[in-house]
Length: 78
Image 1 (cartoon, rainbow, N blue to C red):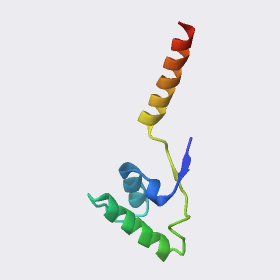
Image 2 (tube, rainbow, N blue to C red; image 1 turned 30 degrees about the horizontal axis):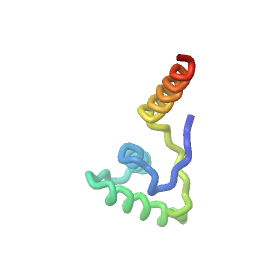
Image 3 (cartoon, rainbow, N blue to C red; image 1 turned 180 degrees about the horizontal axis):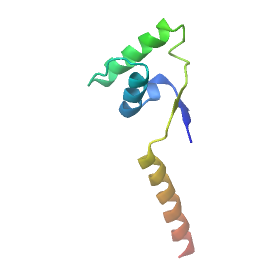
Image 4 (cartoon, one colour; image 1 turned 90 degrees about the horizontal axis):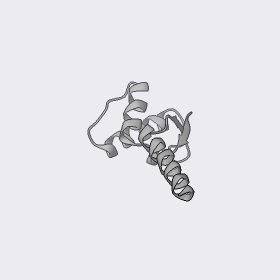
């Protein structure tokens, strides 16, 4: 299950994955990674402001949402 995200919505992990896939240098600084990816998109003729990346959702956030929903359902049963 993938989701679509804009460049400014990518997490650090997602930025690193995208940079690796494009064989670009990975930085420790999130803004440097965004800048590198932004420049790569421009070089490829893409608009970095509207380009959508297919990314895997963060499993921790998915599980947190599921647990919250289950907890709410349990609370309504009590």
